[in-house]
Image (tube, rainbow, N blue to C red):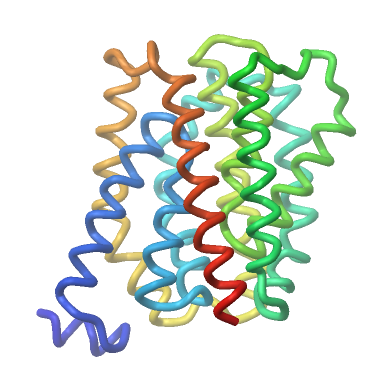
Length: 259
């Protein structure tokens, strides 16, 4: 079995496959529960095993069934005046981000993103919020920044979540806003990644291997949210953001000084 897999994706050990499977299960549960965070976990693990030029498009491609799995919730419960301008702007900015991915070392950018995420987590914990009167231009600007990061590093979910959580609303509406924005981030990178030839055989095979575990664990996370997890949604989301910000910062600093 291992020999068959390595014939498609190159040398990989049984331990590495086990670690990838565990990361995908955890990432999917987190995505189903709080609506985000999975791509960053998958990108981090796959980058170690296969490298970033495989990890970023593979995480993006493998996330497509998950977006369709959660999309009905976003359509029913999200705040459209927030989601639509944010999402449209991601598609405009993602091609530039993909150019950065294939042209420039993104370690410095990831450090800046991590610092921003941690700062915003602190602000949200202290009770800061956007108002509902936040204009389409500001939301489009936030979406463009998220699209740029998604194309270049595949880790823009936390930026989208920071904006979504900063708006007033119930846990169900905030989660739906998160799912809506993350859905756009999944789709906005497809055309640029295809244009730059990043959807290789290795990427497709790895993505197909990931999808069943990913979809199952997303279902578990979504069920937990519906049962009782919505009571803990905001704190869980902030804790996840903080953990992701710290982890990304550590890895970005390591990559920057290793270069």
